[in-house]
Structure formats: structure tokens, C-alpha cells
Length: 118
Figure 1: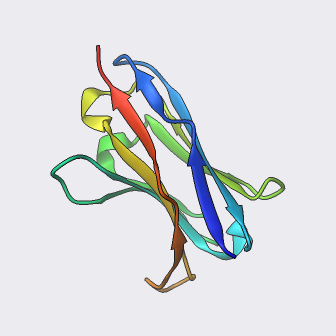
Figure 2: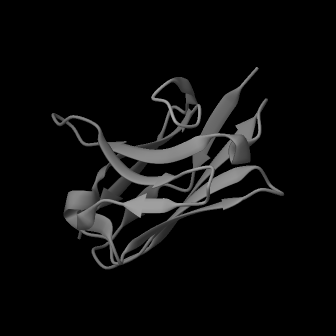
């Protein structure tokens, strides 16, 4: 069974940091295009960061310089390092695996909540 399980969310003050993890089982992360997606209450999903099989990384403008997507192939785990968090970063964050060069989704996790508040 293919599965993604996120962890590392929580509540932090503005300016704080969190490191999200997404552990994969049943498949190898390195063979798929991976992404972190967030969704705030009342808003649509926002694709925050992507890591393609060619090891190319992209981040949306609002998180550039603050968030970094990475992957540990030995642990078969995807990460999102988040620094200088802002209240507008508050959302449910989940990871998604897609077949390379397609929009065909293999699986997604259930998410981990990030709340930024003073």
C-alpha cells in the first residue's frame, strides 16, 4: 500500500520555525515528483513547493527565502523547512506524489496543521 504521512506541525509565534516531514511507504519518493500543498480555511489549495525527479526545486513567491523543500532518499522522506513564519502561513499542509511529467497523482497525505499566532 502506498502511503504518505506528515508530521511536524504545531503552533508557533510569528518569526518562528518549523520543520515538516512526509514519510513515504510502498514506493520510492525519488521516483516521483513531490510537492507540499497548503490549504487555509475558506481558501483553495496552494502548491507551496515542488521537488521534481530531476532534483529541480520550485517555491511560490510568498515563501521564497523562508521555506525550503528537500528530500532524504535514505529515509524515503520529504521535508519542508519553514523559517520566519507569518500568520498568513497558517494552514493544513500536506504532501503529494505525482508520476513524473504528468499531473497524475499517486497519493497524498492527510496533512499536518500549522498555526502561526501571537
